[in-house]
Image (cartoon, rainbow, N blue to C red):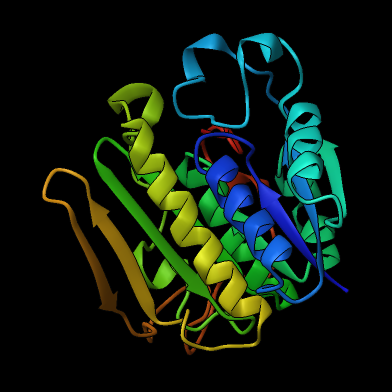
Length: 244
């Protein structure tokens, strides 16, 4: 059975998991198990976008509430939890154990770390993000071409906007999660349509776009002469795996 590793149990991870549960219940998904990793606790200020949680859950570990909610929605889905973060010292181990990684975090350090680990161990990965009125999602195949670094070469210098600093509209998180689930289900079914495209949603303009992108010859991760062959902690400067 394939194992899907969902990193982040927040605003993007919750709607993604809901869509995955719906696919399991309807029989539209091949058999898979779900492991969710997060180290955070439910906060009242996030309830408007973290739709699996309620007031009664405030203060409880997210993964604990997350798993219970999913089991109630899809009892046949095997759900496991990991309390912690997707960090450099665990990245290869966690990536190796998964058949597919879904990145539902809110910072560049986590995204680059997951992209690198997935490429190194040969696993497909889906990245999804939401900030302000914008949602984006893209997927890389097991071989990593094209990969996240083909578009975004490296971590931005200085502070980068995320939901904590720039804000995010709750429903936009739902769109990002739905896009991630769609790509993940496509990959689980063995389809290739998920790769080589960036899907974006502009909530202000109410527009959904699917734009192709190609492997970059000079990409440090999947290019003709890649520089990234292992996980080095110093490469990921910034907070890692803060879910939204």
